[in-house]
Image (cartoon, rainbow, N blue to C red; front, side):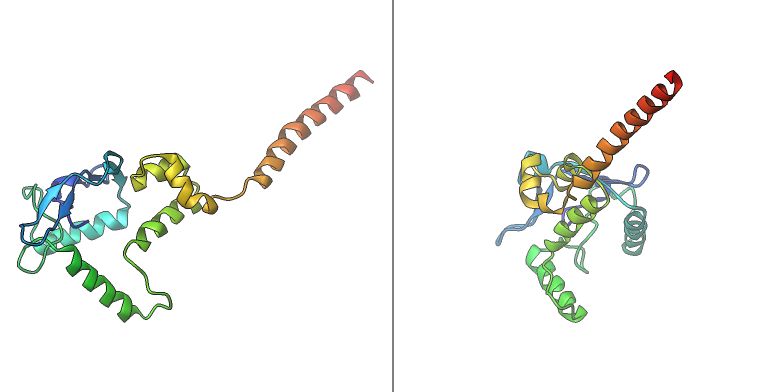
Length: 176
């Protein structure tokens, strides 16, 4: 998020390209670098409300399509946001919200994954959206969230065999 630039937002296709991150190291100017792993490079579908919020944010800070390398999120003086500064703002917002269980920013990633699973996305899709290196990494973390399939198994067998049984019964009735 801190390394997201205008040119990585495709409003037409409503996609975000994640192919770099903002690196902040003490004593150096912040810079953009590849993500941790090759699997972290990905396209993420952008829901309508996110596209609208990003467009409004860009308009409010004066960013447009011509600002291809412009960071979407900066400090008031236009400098990149350091990770520790973001963490301070996040913790202050969580404290102000008075939620019962304090939330880490990383918890939003788990929430996103569980939301995708709850709404029927496959392991393959969840893996791709989160940038996991493999489906086994996704399953190791989130397998408990996928619904059990016993009811679907029963239903599949009932539908197929019950239909077959009904067809056999109709055929037998015709013969008699």
